[in-house]
Length: 248
Image 1 (cartoon, rainbow, N blue to C red):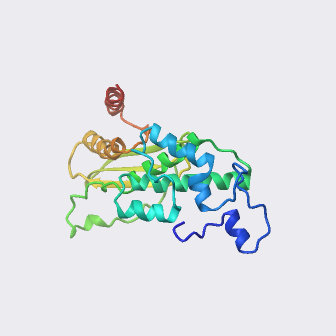
Image 2: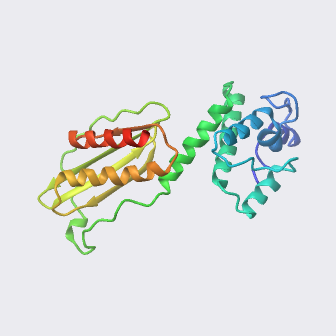
Image 3: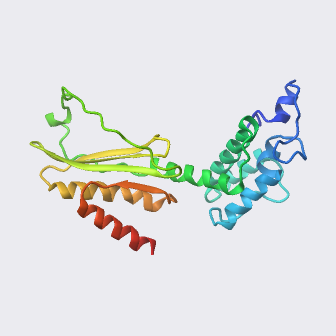
């Protein structure tokens, strides 16, 4: 994008490929990078909606806009707040443009904004601080365990579209208690996982610790769609109470 090398219709025409160079979304102007992300009516609606929903503090680009490349350099140089959200909005606009070109899928400004929000929330989770480190000394022989002789596979179902799914649990053995979790998106893609050895703590404490640690970065992100799998009834009751209180 910063090198003006995206295969827009205008760029492909300049490279000698014979095709209709007009924007497939508005059919009013040559489709180049500046038009796709800045000048197209669809792009205008997306940027305005991002500001209206307070996902961006204000319109990031000056008026009149010079070029996308210069605007991005200016935003980065001036440490524009929420610059990562601007980048994800640009990515979202490009993905929906491709859906229109290759699959004839007509997108909406709200759908484009929601995709950017979900991507930003997932990125926030991926870059959040890792799970608490294990309390086992590095020299302990318990750092390596032989694989079990037999493995039992358990089915895992995808959450509904737009949701992420969290599985966490605690386990107890003769060596002690451990807690762990894994987060996946609505396509089954891996987002984050972690584990912690908790020595001789009660199993309920291990499960509660895993739940607390995994929910902390979610509260800091914009993720609204959440499917939490809780095994213990006591934790389930506490979780519902906390989430209901937070929602109010």
